[in-house]
Structures are given as structure tokens and as C-alpha cells.
Image (cartoon, rainbow, N blue to C red; front, side, top):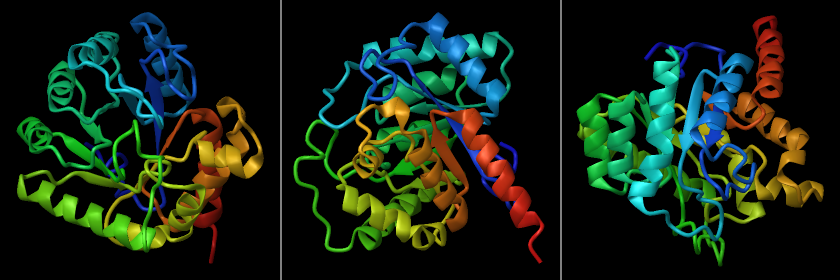
Length: 274
């Protein structure tokens, strides 16, 4: 994986494009649930500037029920294969918390596992290590079905940071070196918790490359009185700009073109500061 995708190129923020191959995504309502439409969408995101395509076959929105493993694999793997057969040579991530899904996607040509379970499953870590792949560790309090019932923290920034640092150490002990840390905005967090995490991002950035995923999330709708997820572009860009300011390595977004433009301008301004 090159320096851009590892988050080590100074001043450059990598854009991850979200590709949901699910019938019940909070943001696009299953618009790309079949392989053909998902492939077209993924290639469009790539053309708009997505350096990583993040493919997910299980909705982890608040209240979501688990998906059978064979069904999740059947959603994700054909798209990974289709991208590689189409000649796409860019980085591909699989958004999963399940080791069999991660293993199958890596074998099909994925490069990265985006683990919303935060590395809690040793079998998933083993699959990543065996493939020599990269890993995202995301913080989630609870599990998707119940995580928003009553999330509580004494110090959300400190607790999320401590968890991710510990999980990164465990991953490195298994031989996984290419890592991102994701604070998991909206995953077992209230709007207040999400704001505190955004305000304190520098504390997590100091511990390693950070992938920030705020795009279209519910807390943005609460802050802006916008119930429709795909109308939250301005709020999503504001969160991406805050991530840039804090020094994140990457942002995971639905609106790739607009986000890339925002970051290009911010990067150009930063390059001209004295």
C-alpha cells in the first residue's frame, strides 16, 4: 500500500468512498444492493476521487439486525471480484466485523478490513495478519441493535482513545502494522458524545492515523434539523473540515466529489501558509 493510503503523505487526506451493498442502509436505502448497480456506483466514486472503496454488506445503523454470514459474503465478494475483473487497481476495503467475510473478501482482492467491531474477534485479526492486509479499528459501545439505547461515558474522548490504543497494540502483536483508528461517531454515542469526540480529535490523532466517518450521520441531522440523510452534505463537509484541521489521515464519505474538492482547497491553503 502506498504512502497516500497509509496516511503518511504529509498534508494529504485520503478519501474513502462508501459502497453499501445492502437493502437497508441508512443513507441510500438499498439503491446499490445488486452487483451491477454497486459496480457502477463504485466506479463512479473512484472517478470522483475515492482512493479507497469501502464495501459493506451488513447495515450497522442503530437498531439494525445481524445479517447471516453467507448472505453478507454473497453481497460483498461478487463486487470485489467484479472491480478487480474490471481492471480496478485501487485500494478496496471491506466493512465487516466478521472473520469469514473478511477472509473471503481478502481472497477476492480486497486490501483492507474496516472492522466496526474494533478488533475484538481474534479470528478476524488472524485473517488480516495472514493476508498481510491493512486494518481499521473502530470504537463501538455495545452492538448495532442496542448501541443507541443509553450510551454512557465518563470521558468519551479518553475512553475511546484508550480502547483504540489497546486494540492497536493487540493487532500489532499479531503482526498487523498498517492500521487506522476510527472513533466510531454515532456507534453507541449521543450527539453530545460525537461533538466531544470531534472537538478532541487531536488526542486520538496523536496516537496514530485516524479514519473519520461522520458522513450523513444522524447527529448531523439533529444539529441541522435535517431528517433526510442524503440532504446532510453541508454538515458532512463541516465534519470533514474539522477532521482536516485535527490532522486525520482519511475521511469515509458518501459524497466523494464534494469532499475531495473541499480537501483539495484546504490542502492548497495549508501548503501556502508561512
